[in-house]
Structure formats: C-alpha cells, structure tokens
Image (cartoon, rainbow, N blue to C red; front, top):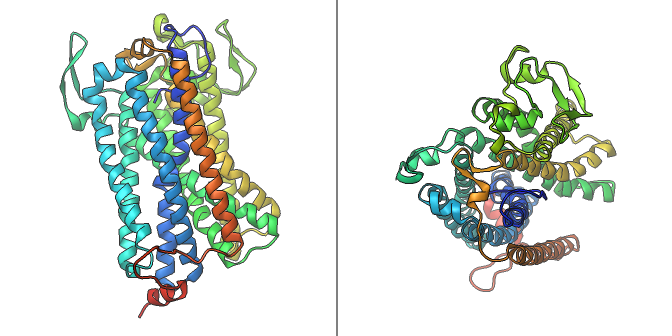
Length: 471
C-alpha cells in the first residue's frame, strides 16, 4: 500500500527498495482488481440477457468471460498473496505498532476472498450442470464478495490516510474500535471512488478488445457487437458519476488532507485566489516552473470561491514536508488522471449521442480507434489515481502517526527480495497472457464448444439455450 518512486535521500537505506517493491506489486495487482469486482458483473449481465431473451450469443459471451475471470482471479490471488507477505516482511514497524487496527480490514477481506473463490468455482462448474436460473444465482455472490473484498482493502488504505478508531498511550495502541477503524473518515468516498474506477477499467478495457477486433475485420457481427456494447455502456454510464465523485474526493482532501492537496496543486505558500496549474514542475528552489495557470481556479474548485484559502506546503513542518520531486509526481499524476477522465467522458458522450439518435454504435473508424485506446488509458488513469493517494501521503505511512522510515524493515537485502518478486509476478503475468491468447485463438478458430466437463451430465450449447428459454 506504499507505492514508491525512485528517489534518494529518504532516510533508511531500506526505504527505497521497499517502496519500489510495493509500488511494483500494487501496480501489478491493482490492474487485476477490476476483473474480480466489475468484470464479473459484466459476465452476469451477459448471462442474464442469455436467459431472459433466449440469446445464444450472450450465453457464449458469458461462458467465455467466466473463463477469463477464472484465469485473472488466479493471477490476482498470487499477486494479492505477495502483497500480504510484503506488508509483514517490508513494514514491520507498521504491523508491529498498528497491526491490531490495520489488520481488521484485511481479516474481513480474507473472508470475502474465500467466498469469492468458492462461488466462482461453483459458478464455472455449474455450467450445464444446473438449471439456468439456479446457475445464474450462484454467480451473484461472486460479484458481491468481490465488491466486499475491494471495500475492505480500501478501508485499510483510507485508514492510513485518516487513521481513527484507536486509543494510543505512549505511542502504543491500547484500545481498538473495529467499526471505527473500518468505517473511517475517508472510507465512504474513497471506497466509492475505487469501485467506480473498477467498473471504468473493466468496461473500457473489455470493450477495447472488441473494438480492436472490429477494426481488424472492418465489420462486426452480433456477437462482437454485443461483446462491445455491454462493457462500453457500463463504462459510459459510470464515467460522469466518477468525475463527480472524484471532484468530491479532491474537495475532501482539501479539508482533511491539506498536505496532499497542496502537493496536488503544487502550492508552496498558503494563500487565496490560487490558480489551477496544468503541467509544470516544482523546482528545488521552491518555485513552480512551466505549466499553464488558470487564475483563481484551484480556490474556486476547492471552496466555490476564488477567495478560498488553500494551505500550502509552508504549513507543513519542514521535517515532514514532501520533497519537490514527490510534489511534482503527485501533481502530474493528478493532471494525467483528470485529463484522461475527461477524454473518456467525451468518448462516452460521442457514443451516447449516436446511440440516442440511431440506436447503434458510431460507424466512424475513429470511434473504434478511440475505444481501443480507451482501454489502456483507463488503466493509466487507475494507476495515476493510486499514485496520487499513496505518494501524496509521503513521508507518512500512517498519516500523522508513523513515518515511512520508521515503518520499514532494518534487516536483510530488500533488493534481492524485490528482484524475486519481479521474477515471480513477471512469470505469472506472461503465463496469464499466454493462456488468454491461446483461449482467444481457440475461440477465433471456432473450436470452443462452450464448457466441456470431465464427468457428470453434459449437453450441447443448443440444449442449454433451449432450456433457458422462457416457458
């Protein structure tokens, strides 16, 4: 949960490799989160359409997406397990002092993880073994447990940003209020922000695969069209809501996390009528260089008035003031996140306008090109959002209570551990890409017959569709 950037002079010699390892692992894992949370929702939407409308193409999509979900769930289980071990091995200061509180959300997350694993196995095994609606209902716990697990992890992270629910005596935790820890002051808006981000990434990234296929073939059939429409429609509906929620999150940061907000705005001196700076960087001289300034816009967005006072970095004690290079990273990451969000909003508006007028996908090849690019851009948006919330908290691990240099391990060579982590996750990632590529080639060759089962009852896909038809 403590992403890093390559920076020297952070205190302990272990801080740099430890933060780099957490940054790599979390950056890898967070891409998989939307597929455990939101992609399974898309799968269930296709399944519902297949049963409700006797749609064989939707049924085939649901079956294939369930296979993809199973592969990515397995990869996510590996990277999530690595993250769990890293918390204890790399950050004993965090777990030793605050494990009684910090461990509560992770304990809840473990329950949701096992529920998700159980029900995704039941759902996949249940194809052709259960009646259609019975099988459909076994998939809903997969979605709900994925949401619950994600919210649990966000609860742990938001607690680091705004800790509460604990009683300290001589710097040690002597009492813990579990509900106050889990439902901390930042939980609700950070949790909603992450859930919406998951649906954006799953929607745009899944649609991007079908958009690329349409571009390659220069046409689309009903299967490709439906495979594009389900995820893209979800993402298009979510993006305006996410922008509104993101604005709320930024305003809460202004109120509750002034140091982070000062880094976002790259503001060195407390003042009113603060301009919104697009781009640029904060130099070692404490001055903002380059960038485009919109007069008064930052104050207006923070407090609905250009007279709103924003606390700058000068309000942060020098001993814990973030370094200029960290401030620049947070600021540019925020700019990239916002820019991509509005670009995705424009793409969603394009789709919405054409659909409202013609009930069809925009015919322009440029729309498909933009839709294909939107998948990668949504991932970049997700990653930069995490950089803002995590790097923006530095140099604190638990805001106001525990510095990162005091949380890191003091034993062993973390660089070797980091290299091993890159090797493990890299090989798992390559294997996942290979498996998904093989599945795709099999589907394109028409060799996929739905779900073959090693034993037990079986039936052709056509029979499953007939059974799903409403009586």
